[in-house]
Amino acid sequence: MASHEHRSLRYAYGFDDVAIAPGDVTLNPDQTDLSLKFGEITFNIPILAAAMDGVVDPGFAILFSKFGGLAVLNLEGVHSRYENPDEVLARIAAAPDQEVTPLLQKIYSAPLKEELVAKCIRRIKAAGATCAVSVTPASTKKLAPVIVEAGADILVVQSTVTTARHLSKSYRGLIFSELCSSVPIPVVVGNCVSYEAAYELMETGIAGLLVGVGPGAACTTREVLGVGVPQVTATMDVAAARDDYFRASGRYVSVITDGGMTHSGDICKAIAAGADGVMLGSIMAQAKEAPGHGYHWGMATPHPGLPRGTRVKVGISGSLEQILFGPSSVTGGTHNLVGAIRTGMGMCGAPTIRDMQKANLLIAPAIKTEGKVFQMRQQSGKS
Image: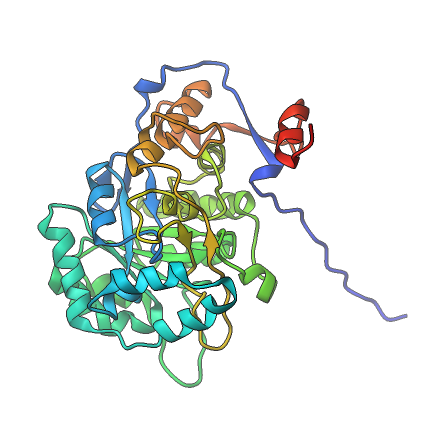
């Protein structure tokens, strides 16, 4: 009789599947340290604003830096293609839903202009802000010299799925070890969701790694391709690689959970799962200073052949300062993110992010619904 090998499936967990158990010791929230490092650059808060045109423009990056975080500018977006990006962004926001994807495809088909790339970076640096910029692997070799010359502080190389070994018969792909040795600034790469790929990427010399394939509010990769891993499991796997790599090499690579967080509780869970920080898109797009006019769309949305994103209306909920530090005028956990992180760490007795990574996570799918009958009725519109 022929033998058959049977594959088994393991369960993977997202934010709604888990809860953080409080610690046996508690701590005043104001005694917590939220600092995040890439290489020798330190940030006061562990929050990055996503490299999406509806979230970050040079002005937003400058303001975000003043608040102690890091906003990443998409260097393959409208600011590096058009002299008048504000007008282009307004057109995207005003377009009817049924017309927005072909409009985005047309807008993003305009060529990149190296002089605009340098102009954006110099504007951010002239304001005294830390400048982080994002490019795709295909554009990295061409734009890296321009980015360094213009004075950027951090280079983010980002695609839907990133590995250290990309196979192609037609061209020699980007080699991250060569990139890290050739540029004098920290390199952050993404995105990744597995232990093995994360470990190999860390061996190339990168300073940070973004975790997440398809969880973003404006991303449809999971629907279009069926590819992705829920964020809690993905973060835990990549964090395990980080810890093993640190023990083997003595070099620490910061892990950033990118996408899928809709409120501050998710941020706390991401850190408890092992993240050193988080990258936020839709929450940041709700700031009145964000360039998207209350709309948000992903980097893959304007793909000419296979769009893997959509424009979503997130609205404007308040100022960036309110979103980060309060005071909160909403109850859903989208304002005063920093205060929520500090309070969550205090409840777990965690003075640092590294301590919070040791918090006790539970499988708890009822965490959002247990005892919330009246809230659920309000949300569903029932009396």
